[in-house]
Length: 262
Ligand SMILES: NC(=O)c1ccc[n+]([C@@H]2O[C@H](COP(=O)([O-])OP(=O)(O)OC[C@H]3O[C@@H](n4cnc5c(N)ncnc54)[C@H](OP(=O)(O)O)[C@@H]3O)[C@@H](O)[C@H]2O)c1
Image (cartoon, rainbow, N blue to C red; front, top):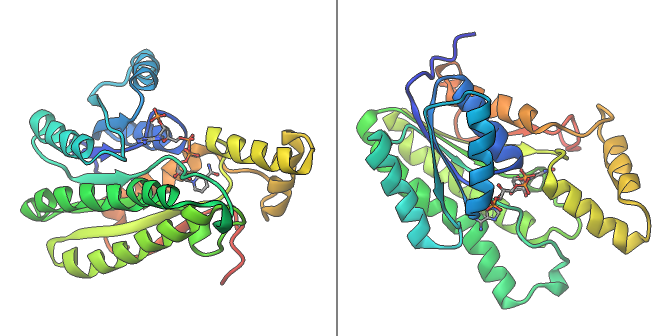
């Protein structure tokens, strides 16, 4: 299927590793020009080395700490300076702090809000103005299966990704008239550093091996395995395309069937 994405301009956040990195790679494979960001310059340098080695061109890198409004504004300004516009925005973020509701203090809530919800709202507001001019746009938020089925101990993720989902739906009602679609992808258990970290926390709590926790997670998935980052990337890239032009205002799971709803 020709996704017809060649020459489009995408901005992606939190993309030095894991799911974000795979999405950046998927978009580059389709000939999209991609501004890739994360909060750590060294991680971006390593990504640059890897992508250059793979022969990718047409991407640019920028440090953007999603907890800093000034970084978000600078990221958007760089996209315009370098690529003239923004057609596609992928709002990804690092996982917010894990913990039970009783363990969260005011500062945790504030940071979780800024990182998981406000950053996406700020960047989206900037990008939408460009997309309106182009009469074409794709906004995709990487959320979590926790939106449909809250996960024990992930208080901030459960709360703020649900809020982001509600915001996305509301935005889709406003910007659909400009041929801009707004959707969310809900990854299930996907093998990245984040999942490894969460498995390590659980393993410590239960006094067992991390590998055992990862095995249990896989066993809970109907497909009996963990997801791969590129499997989240594939559906994300498809949603960016014209082939997905009539999919709007929704959340799509990429979870191997893990969410127990119909
Ligand atoms: N993996 C899963 O099973 C799973 C399931 C459901 C939802 N999710 C969600 O999907 C998202 C991506 O997860 P992942 O598994 O790909 O995580 P990951 O492998 O840990 O990657 C996280 C990315 O976030 C970046 N990041 C961290 N703090 C940041 C900040 N303050 N500002 C900007 N970027 C920042 C990291 O780069 P730097 O350190 O270079 O900044 C890294 O590139 C997360 O929000 C996660 O909670 C993951």
